[in-house]
Length: 106
Image (cartoon, rainbow, N blue to C red; front, side, top):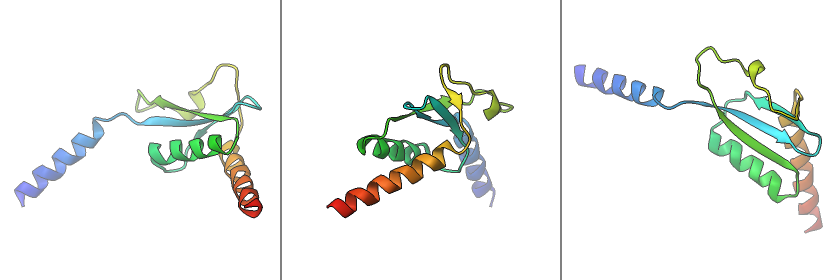
């Protein structure tokens, strides 16, 4: 029992050492951005954004380290871009439409 507890504590502290990142998506055509708050891995987020780019969408992403436990997504600002709530959902829908159109053409 004691060994399991020590192992669990080690695992917990091991994962806490890594900093988390804000997942930020930018629509470079409209110069807007959103801090994505849905629960997903950085890998899934970057893969979805790169799929949008491959299909011709003018989007980019930023992984910004969270350096403070009290950090707020409202404090995140991107120079030259305006904040747009719902941007990620809009881009996902737009990408879905593009993918569907490409499949129909094929």
